[in-house]
Length: 466
Image 1 (cartoon, rainbow, N blue to C red):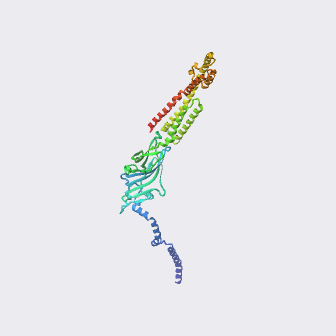
Image 2: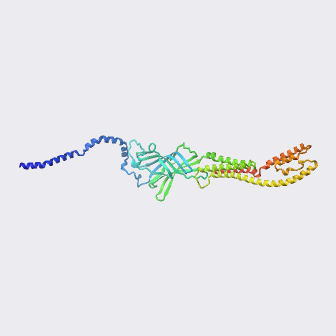
Image 3: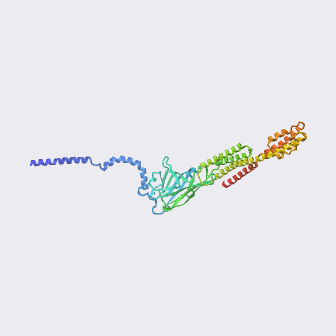
């Protein structure tokens, strides 16, 4: 009997020891209770809630988690009405070469989303920055024909969201956009350009979203201090229309149109006045002696090079259009006047050469007849009397030949004083006649025709383009 009890004790002792150790280990590794967790995490939870209290209350008040804001307001019903108003801050630049303009503006959207309505005892709105915009639905308005655009982000993203208790929303942002402007330079620089900035929804056609100006004509406001270097802003105008895309349908489109008129004074100083002076300077050659070949040719070539420089400078700052501009007409017609002044002298020089050849032949005949008349006159008193000859037929003879022969003709001592006075009077009249006749007829006519034609051209040009 005692043996049996000892055997039973030895059998149950290891089992009891194993259960005790397992119970101890289970107690050691047992998860903490709910109260223990609450006591441990309560201070940390309070600190975490203190940093997120405002955002959490706003989201709970607006019930953001209760709705799917990937869908537009009133999905399945009528189109949501989105009002737009714009305040233009500045027009930064207008490029003729790239045919675009850069504008900074405040773009404001107005619509109603009943899902964001909240109770308010004082009917006050709530204002948020751009962080909440990512969690709700906003219109997907974009700029048509835009090349570049961005929302200003200094020091934070320039976005404002204001929600009213009845669900009306104001969404405002400050953006800079560079958009295309199709310019016509036919009348440049006396031109007027009409540019427009167009707004449209990208995803929603007119069945889902209706864009309109919030306050009609008062929806477009501008800063009174908008000043441009080359343009004067004549008018800002807001309008609306529809745009059709074959695969997606009709879309509402809003237009911000503005008319720009170019300031002409800069081009008067840099282009027109220098061109006028070059043309008038080319007329100086008409008053220079036709025998002064280097003076007249060098003057014409210098003016031609100057005109080429002016034309190149003007075209360098303009796009390469395939039509003729108003400034091109003025420059090339002025260039033609300068070119014709050189051609005029070429004609004068050629005709002068022909005339001199004819005179050389006449002088050969004249020398033979002159010797015969001189011999007959000296047969009476041994002296040559110039009063007995008619020198009017030889008024165009060279002055040095006349002087030499006149000195030789007054060799007698008894009649030298009277003959000398008579010879000087005749020579004096011949010199005046030679100076007058030394100007070619073409030069004489050009002194009148060229200025008259240029004045007439300017009158027609400025009346037509201005």
